[in-house]
Length: 242
Image 1 (cartoon, one colour):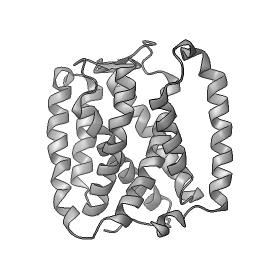
Image 2: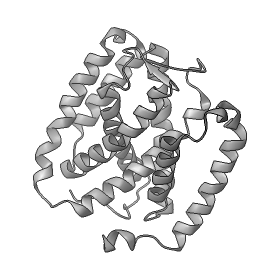
Image 3: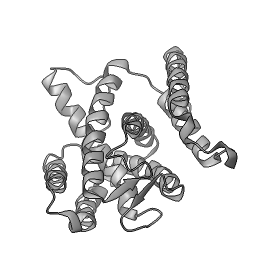
Image 4: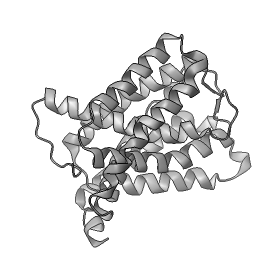
C-alpha cells in the first residue's frame, strides 16, 4: 500500500485543480438537468469522489492525453452503436447526448489507474489463465446485441471485438484491466439505470453484459493506446506486467 500512496505527488495537486475546474464548468452547463429537490445523490457523489481520487494518482501527462483521445473516440463509437440500434436510450432521447461523451475518457483514465493498482497488489502468474473471460464476454455480448445484428453499427462493433481478441499480447494486463473496468462498471451502470438516466432494451437494472462491457471496452482502449504509441514511435513510460 505504501508503494501505491507514494504515487501521489505535486502533479496530483495540479490535476486535482484542473478537475475541479472541469467539474465547475460541467455543473454550470448541465446543473439544470439534475433534480436537486430530491436531495444529495450519495451514490453519484461517492462515485465521483472515488474516481477523482484515482484520477490524480500516478500522473503521466503525455500518456494520459493519448488515452483521453482514445477514450473519447472509443466512447463515441460505443454511444453511436448503442443509441442508433436502440440497445439503450437516454432520458433526453439524444443519439447520443453530447454530455455523456466526456465520461468515457474520464472512465478510461480511472480504469487505467485501477488496473495499475490491481497489478501491483496481486501476485504474478495465475491471472493469465483468466484471459478466457474475454472471448466468453464477446460471445455473450453478441447474444445481447443479436436483435440488432443487421445494423451497420452492430457489425462494426462485432468486428472490433473480434479484433481485440485477435491482437492479444499481454494476457495479465488484459485481465487486470478487465477486472478494474468491470468493477467500476457495477457502480456506473447501477447508478445510470436505477436513476433512468439511460435504459437498456432488456429493462434490467443493469444488464450483466453492460457491467462487463466496461471491462472489455477498457481492454479495447488499451489496444488503441498501444497502436497510437506505435504510430507515434513512442516508448511507453510505464507498462503493466506482460
